[in-house]
Image 1: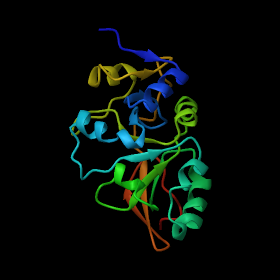
Image 2: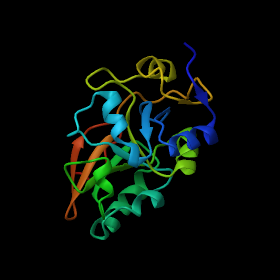
Image 3: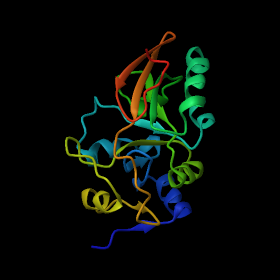
Image 4: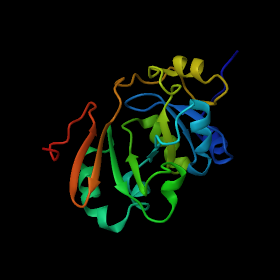
Length: 194
């Protein structure tokens, strides 16, 4: 089977119409959707609903419109130092937007990847619900070819092969009333977490 590959503007249109998509990031290949279609990600990955997704954006301004005002200042300081890059920042959100991606909390993991291809797509689509492109519980995929094997019917961003990612998941930190907690170690360790 020949995998469906699409250039940025076409794939962005497909995402806005409800499609899933595979695309590169600086850490691991991603599986994404527009937030209102995020349920499809849990289904195709066989991922437990208790495991939240990450909201990935092309720039911090696109993500911080969803952040609760109490966390904006601290979150922005962290984002300005480490984005674009392999740091996921969990912050409280406003409204019910987080319900699309985190059904157990009003907080959401946010990230701007250090990948030109990913950011070009994200600027066209707006923030996307994302996760690593692998079946839940299986090893992460390393490239477009492996992603296409895991999800043969999901459209993929072209051109391929994609730039080589680090192969290590993002570091995850969480904010709570001015304090940061390290939840997952990745390729970056924020000096603010000591």
